[in-house]
Length: 238
Image (cartoon, rainbow, N blue to C red; front, side, top):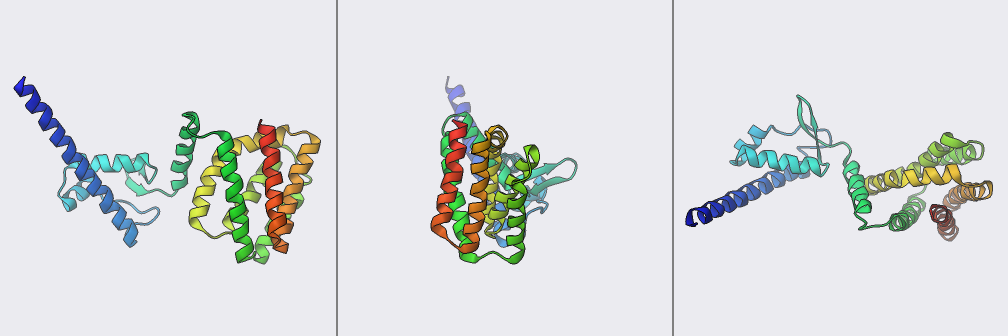
């Protein structure tokens, strides 16, 4: 009995040591990113190099890399090694999908978050102003929406909202919004393809209103247009 307790105690101590060591490895990699030594797409040191540099076990190094891979911070390339992920937003997307599956958040909450973030994005664009090229791209998309149908219309709608996000120039917003948009996309595709003629016309009109409000820097009309846009979507999603 005493021998079994001793073994359990040793196992717990070993587990605690590994936990402390992999946390040390994660912190070290974070510091390399913070200092600029590692950037998006950079190749990480090998497990062996990390273990030797930090004076920790290879198992702890492997555990640290596995955790960071699970978080979407690094990607593994067969036969090449580990790299800083070029698509951190994918990890955020998977987390949101998991939360929806576990019912810790609802579709309605995701829609509401998307509505509020779009208002923030557009208000930021009004504050910074649109360059001529950005205006022309948005105007072209709005005009094309009036003539396209089916998948082509879905693609233009997606491009319109992506352009709004990109026009902020804020990388954190871009990462967060791209992840949310990816989750949201399937629902929007359904709405656009299944909305009746009247609802679809109203939905397309809101894009024109959003664009016009951005050009005129009319925040009140802009927010009203965004509300109408998402009211229609939420109504059709049920």
